Structure formats: structure tokens, C-alpha cells
Image 1 (cartoon, rainbow, N blue to C red):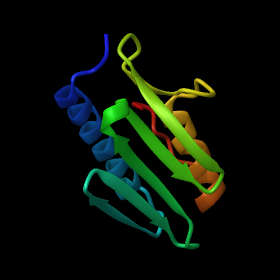
Image 2: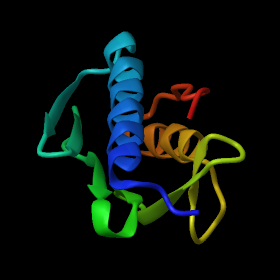
Image 3: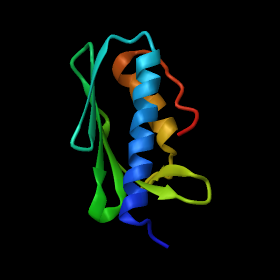
Length: 110
């Protein structure tokens, strides 16, 4: 069963807020901007991490220096899972933050 549009937006809002909270609680020097359903993280070195909602597809897209990733919500696990690698969103965010900012952060709930 596919997600309703309202549930999809609620889930993306929650995950973007969780991501913002992790970055806010870190010691990283970065800028966060959440506008129009797109969360942009700008690291001190100029690289970016972008989380954007794709409502027609019911996907969350992540753009990082290492590439673009598309995530589907898995009701059974309660996690966003990459449609190509099956990597959970939290693991990908930890990996790309380490690659782009040189510091490992934990996104355990994602």
C-alpha cells in the first residue's frame, strides 16, 4: 500500500526535523536552510547535502558530493531505505557527513 500524500509529508517533515536536530546538536560549522520542503546543509568547506521531497513519487531524495540517492519509506521497519542500495537513510547521512565534513555523526533513529 502506498503512502497517502498527507502521511508522506508528515514523514518527510519529521525526518527533516530529526536531521536538523542532529546537525544543530553537533559542533560542525554549517548552515541549515529548510525552505519549500528542501533541507539544505552547507558545510564549512562549501560542500552541500540536500534532502528534498518528491511527492508524486512518495520518495525522499538526497543529493551529496558522492551522488544522488532516492529513498522509499518502509512501513515495516519505519525507515527510509535507498531504492538502489537498500542502505537506510541514517547510515547514508552518517557516511556522507563523514566524507564531506570530516566528522562522523550518528543518525540512529533514521
